[in-house]
Length: 237
Image 1 (cartoon, rainbow, N blue to C red):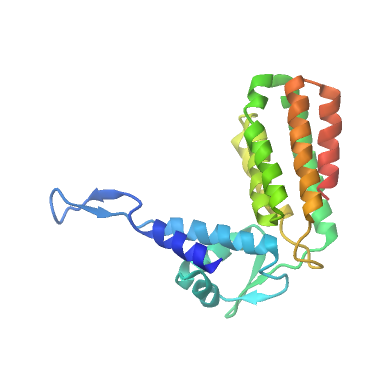
Image 2: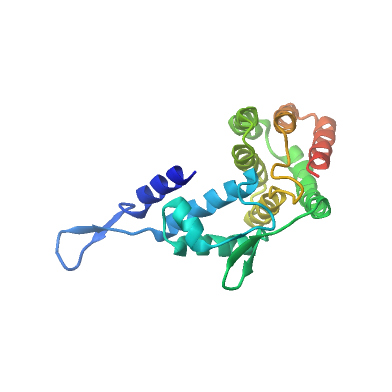
């Protein structure tokens, strides 16, 4: 994990683009994209949370995590602040950040809110979006199957979000997509009683529902769509 984050961060810190250098007419200088480093560290931390590498209840400091990823403490702290806004960690003054301890009740509440938001939208889109548009999402559904087969919860979490985000994007409502994605991310954080919420078999079953749902949408079989959508979100808890 450290090697990947370090190499990736180095690749994106320099040379992201060129702008004219006013000190030397005709010359160019690299644009330093510190936000790219922060974004990569944020994704690395999210992966560590989903896999259970960062454990609920434990406190982690910016400098220690920065050393792990091969970067300074600053982008780590910035990424951790974002995770604090998302409810994954909480600030511990003069120490760092504590991974929030979540129970099954919070997970069930998140699943209920997601269901209240996404199910009505999906049922509306099922009748208004042409079959050809649904068919265009098949590669994303197949990606979730491959990610599930890998058995890596972080890989699956990313592909799962991408599939749901693409489906909701067909609504044309950017705020809906943003809110639903935020809820989805929070629903993927680990529970306090275990680092990984889903076994490989659970991931495969969840991914299979994506494919079945897309098949029903393409076929415009609305009754099957209704049943699959309800079943999919019931399983999210």
